[in-house]
Image 1 (cartoon, rainbow, N blue to C red):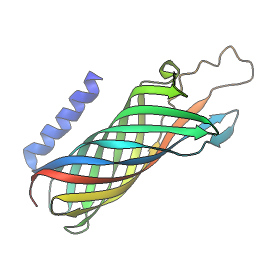
Image 2 (cartoon, rainbow, N blue to C red):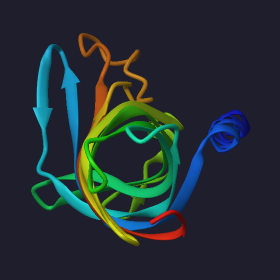
Image 3 (tube, rainbow, N blue to C red):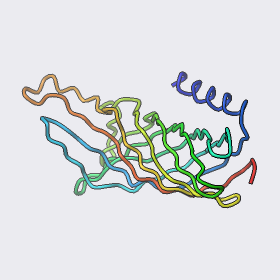
Length: 193
C-alpha cells in the first residue's frame, strides 16, 4: 500500500511541476457488478448501487491534454436474489484527459483499487479476495465554472478471487472481476475557472 500511495504522490508532484492545477471533490454513485467464471462458464449477478466519493486533481499540460489523478472511496459488489455482496475499495485512477473544448472532455486510464472491506449478507469475506484490483476506466465529463460531472465505465482486468479451489476436484480456478458504471458530480475547490 505504501508503494501505491508513493506512486500516487509522485504522479501528483510531477504533474504539478509542469502544469496548471485545479482540484476538488466528487460525489456520485456506482452501478457495480461482478463477473464470475469457473469451468469456462461466465455468470454476472444483478447490479448493485453504491457510493462513490473523494478527491480529484487536474493538471493541465496544455489546452487539450491533462493528467487527472483521483482518490476515491468506491462501493462495489453485486446482488444475486436475496444475497448482497458489498465491497469497499479505495480507488486510485490516473487518467489521461483530452479536453474537446472548455466544457467537455474524454478521459481514460489505469485504475488500482485497494480492498478495504468485503461482506456477503453482513458476513466478512475479505480473506477470500485479493487486496488489490487493477483495471481501466473510460469516460466523458463536463465542466461548468466551479461545477463538473461525468459518466465513466470501469472494467476490472485482474482476478480478485483468492478462493482456494485446490481441494475441490474438477472445479479449477474461480475468477471474479469488478465492473461498474459511474456517474458523479464535482465541485472545484481551487484552480482556474
